Image (cartoon, rainbow, N blue to C red; front, side, top):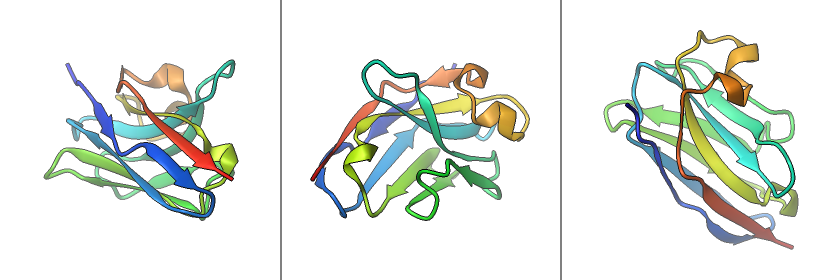
Length: 124
């Protein structure tokens, strides 16, 4: 059983930065960050492979967000820069036992475990 715990959300001004953390991860899993707004499905943001050697991003955040992991600390991070009001959402980290293939790590139904979510609000 993996119990993921997110932290680091809050209110930030447009153009600012925020770092999210997801603790209690495991090297048995690829890790991903997704986000969700009311009335919409959870959407893929970024993913990182078990070793941390590979990463991938949604086009909407590429060049602004960076995912990383510290396996010694069992923690995954999402550094968010140049934030926009459109980035406002509840952010979730997830753990996927699937192979490192985009159709798997970019789809929420291929994730085994989720954290409770953390709200990020970007004001204009």
